[in-house]
Image 1 (cartoon, rainbow, N blue to C red):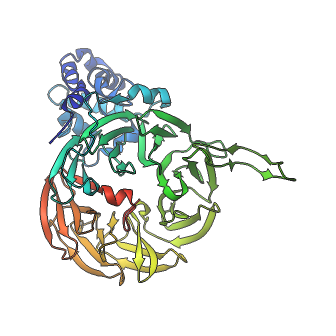
Image 2: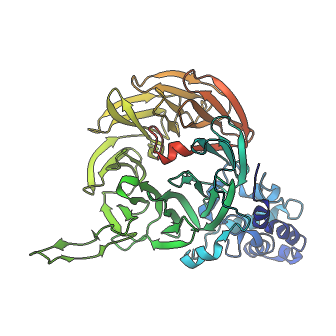
Image 3: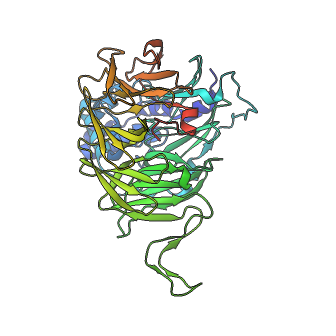
Amino acid sequence: MIQSTAFSDRLRKGAVALAVAGLTLPAAADRLGAQDMGATIYNDLCASCHGESRLGGIGPALIPESLARLRGASLDDVIAHGRAATQMPAFADQLTQEQIAAVAAYIKTPLDNVPDWTAADILAAREMNPDYMVADAPVFDADPMNITLVVETGDHHVSVLDGDTFEVLDRFPTPFAVHGGPKFSPDGRYVFVMSRDGWVQKYDIWSLQEVGRTRAGVNSRNIAMSADGKWLAVANYLPHSLSILSTEDLTPAQVRRVVARDGSESRVSAVYQAPQRESFILALKDAPEIWEIGTTEDSGPYHDGFVHSHEAGMKESLGAEQGLFARRRIEVAEPLDDFFFTPDYRNLIGASRSGDKGVVVNLDVGREIAELPLPGMPHLGSGISWMSEGRQVMATPHLREGRLSVIDTADWSLVKTIETMGPGFFLRSHENTPYVWADVFFGPNKDKMHIIDKDTLEIVRTLDPEPGKTVAHIEFTRDGKYALVSIWEDDGAVIVYDAETLEEVRRLPMRKPSGKYNVWNKITFSDGTSH
């Protein structure tokens, strides 16, 4: 394996300071009130890693908006016993239960003001790897277009797999709590990874080295790559902004506050690339609007207000934007998020806030054109599209119901509801396979994987890869010959299946592997891949 160990060591330099600080905890903390005690302990033990403002540093932000990541463990327990496979040490031998409860309560307290994260902040956080060496060609013999990245959330690493031999070429550390799919440059050479704390990491697959990283927000949702590969957009919950970075050197090109037409601010649920449109599409969490951001110099003009012209050469308009990063507003009846796009990117389906329907928005005309009955909270971000008996269909799982909805994208009719063994999270297929693979992520049957015929829309087989363990997320190799499935456990694995015979071929031990991303499938927008 090849790793930038010196660079990684520098990123972990706060761990020792944190442990030393624990030896000098003022005994006076015991005599303080609970709130003051929590603040004092935080400043003495935690601030060196998590920042005096609690907005993060070497460690993640410790604010209510980011604590949802602590699934399966209480904050008190993490403080007392540490967090496995991270730099977070245990403090049970230094703090009493009362002190632990006090610092946990302090961390759960909302900040009076969450400061902006400006272009200057992004520049200040930026650190490029001084040990990075640009390779003229891949430093490995594998097909660079058939590389698959596996995100291992158990210890915050990514494994780089040869898609032919399934050898691990490298395993590199990532920021804490990677969220959303990594995004590849159009040539497949570079990949960008984002964490919930807004850290964006650039990695060179050819060189098997990290290039650098910066922090683009305080609490972030996902990233998207522009069609020309020049810009990376970061959707932020905190602050309410969209950060656009240069993919070349991670410098900020624009930090845009997200303000709705009525003047209210909104979080950004997600940002997507619309390649044919040469734009980014934004889902706004708190406003009944969809934003389109142009990624070329000739974008627009987009008008926020009235436009009229009485004679040639005379035009009057309000709020026009034109050029690189020009914004277009599309107003909808209610806030929509978790988008699915048709392959031509002319239409999107967004989930309604009630979670019981989908709304189709035509991006060309900028208005809603249909509603779809999609009860049970559809997970449209994992929806996929394929040709079924000569017609283009899309399908989405439902987070609250054991069913898949299959929709004809020509007339938006419901083709079929496929009953499953429980609510699922991910769907995947490939143009070279006759099957759709669907997990059953939630409920007692989380260890099952359904195989569905693309044409008949019938479940033809149900796999049981590891009884009692969570089985989730599927990715195919470049040629669609093999399907990779995650055993989503700390002592988990990636299981390689023959996509034709549906038989297991190989099992690769991994630390809670979640998403898997094949270079070719992602940069070509392969049929059956979530985009």
